[in-house]
Image (cartoon, rainbow, N blue to C red; front, side, top):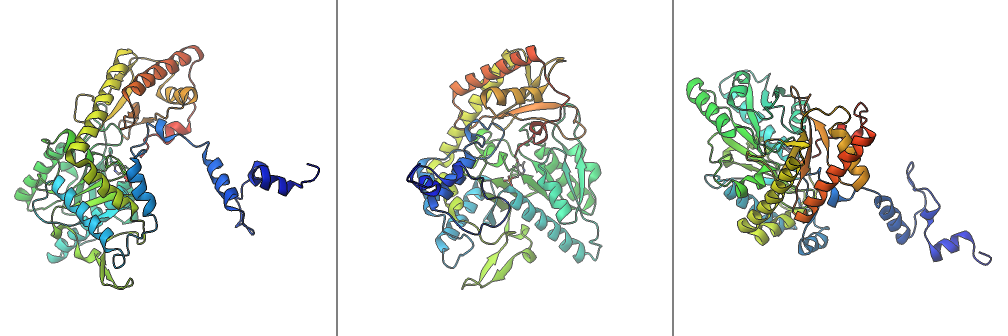
Length: 458
Ligand SMILES: *Cc1c(COP(=O)(O)O)cnc(C)c1O
C-alpha cells in the first residue's frame, strides 16, 4: 500500500462496498462508477432466497432462454403507448382472444392485460359493482349498500377490494375438513344488494376449487325464482391455466351461464415472469361502459380500462411467446409433468408414515398440501418448515387455515416445471431428516415465527 492511497487501491483491486456501508437513508449526493453500483446491488441480492428452492410461491421462477431474450429486448417498450406501439397492443388482443377461446366464451368478447390477478380482480369486481348500480338505478332503487359474497378460502385481494372500494364483504367461514365453499354456504348471504359472488379455482391454501358448478346452478335458480340476476366471477389466478389442461371436461368457466368474468395470473401457471395477469369477460356487455376512459395524450384516441397507466410490454410479449410456443399440447405436457411429480411427492410423504396429504384425490393444482399425522407433542409443521430451511435451504411454508379452520396447520409444496423427479426424492429425504433432527432436539412450536406468519405465499 506504499504507493497507492485507499481510493486508488479500491479502483484497481476491489470496489467501495467491500469496506463502505450501502447508501440507505438519504438521497446520495455523489454517484459512483457503474461497476461499483452493479456490484453493490448484485452482492446485496446474493444472500436472498434461491427461487429454485422456493416451493412456497405460485409465481414463475424459470423461463426458456428465447423467452428471456424477448423480455430483455423489449424492456424499453411502454405498453400503454398504443399509438407508438400498436403491435404490442394487437398482441395483447390476440392473447385475450386466445384466453376467451380457452375459457369457452360464447362469442367475441373483451378483456385486458393487468399487472397480475390483483389488478384484474379489482377491475372485474368494479365492473360487478357498476353493473349492479346500473340495474338498481334503472329500477329506481337504492345503491347505498353493495355487498360481495365469497369464502374464507379467497386470496387477500378480495377483502382488499371491498375495503378500497367500499363494498360490504360477506365472507363464508370455512370449517374443519371443509376448505372450499358450495351453494349451500352461499345462499343465505345473497340479497338484492349482492353485486356478485366470487368463487376460487385453485385456492391458495390447498389448491382445490369451490363448487363452481353448484354455485352457478344456485344463481340460475335464484334468477328464475326471485328475478335476481347475480353474476359469478371466477378467480382463476392459479387454476385458470391448470384446469383447461388437466381437467378439460370439468366445467368452471363460461360453459356455466352465470360466470360473467374470469381473472388469471399469467405469471403463475401461465409460466411468465412476474408482472402479468388477465381479465376476460363473458361478453362485451359485462364490462361496465362507465369504467372505460378515452384519452388522446399519446397522439391517438385510445380507450383505457386499467388501474395503472404506464407499464412494460415485455411480459405481454412473453405471454404470447408461451401461447404460440406451447399451445394446448405444450401446456398440457407441462401441467401433467408437474402433476405427476406432485403425485410422487404426495405418495412419498404418505409412505413416510409421518404425514397425511390433504385432498390428494380431488381436482387440484399441482402441489402437495400436507400435515403431520397423529399426535406430535414435541414439534409441529412450523418447526419442520424452519428446520428444512435451516438444513437444506428449501422454502416450504407452514400456515394456519382461515376461520373457522384456523386450528388446522398445514404445509404446502408447489411442484414446478423445474422440479425434477430426483429433486422430489431429495426433498422427501430432507423432510424426513428435518423431522429426525426435531425428534432429538424438540421443536419450538410456541414461538411465533415469520415463516408461519407469511404463510400462504402468493
Ligand atoms: C395469487 C392469487 C391472487 C393474486 O394474484 P396476483 O397475480 O399475485 O396479483 C388472487 N387470487 C388467487 C386465488 C391467487 O392464487
